[in-house]
Image (cartoon, rainbow, N blue to C red; front, side):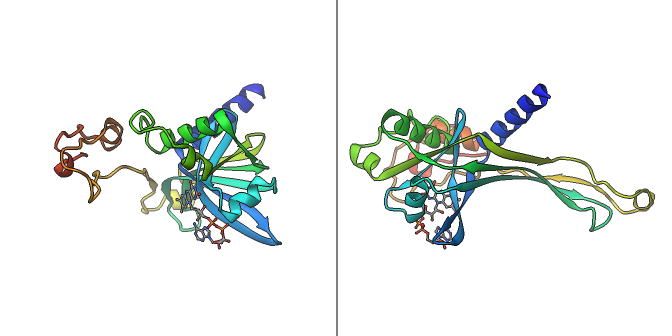
Length: 215
Ligand SMILES: Cc1cc2nc3c(=O)[nH]c(=O)nc-3n(C[C@H](O)[C@H](O)[C@H](O)COP(=O)(O)OP(=O)(O)OC[C@H]3O[C@@H](n4cnc5c(N)ncnc54)[C@H](O)[C@@H]3O)c2cc1C
């Protein structure tokens, strides 16, 4: 049983580390609302960030009960019948109350969020200014009460359908980076950074504006 629990927590961490976006559910004045937001795992917690002026973030920061759903769509299960057709996915739901992070904890969480978006980027950009930090709210929810569901099986067709001539199998779905497009206001000669080159599978370009980056 212990091994199973550890395996499940590892699977949860793998999902949280892979998926960029979560959906936070909360109730505001009796109205349920679900808000999409970027997420990152920081040890035994999930962190999110946004504007200090954001109404939903302020509500969450006050300790209102929330639910965070994280989903990865991994494939289409093509069964021999529409009834048995389904999806491969990893899906987690985390319940709890968020706490506001301050000081070093806040800055560490922001680094983790930036690295989640683009690994290696923190070392390539300037540190945030005091003004930027003041305008940003960072919240953390502990990974304590959660559920995880993983669907990764083959079609579960009836013997009658298997004996027939209809194709069955799985079509994997993955996210992949496209070609990096330089910003219209990029100064000539600014090279593509290593973080972007690694993400897109391209070689860092020295040519800047015309720089091609990708497969
Ligand atoms: C993929 C993705 C990633 C995002 N990542 C972040 C992030 O890391 N940090 C961040 O602060 N924001 C992120 N956002 C935007 C986020 O969903 C909110 O829009 C944002 O936080 C501002 O919310 P607000 O304070 O204006 O909303 P509130 O004023 O609290 O919301 C009021 C109402 O506005 C509507 N609303 C708010 N957001 C949305 C939305 N996204 N789509 C449709 N209706 C909406 C809802 O009806 C809501 O009830 C992300 C959005 C997406 C789709």
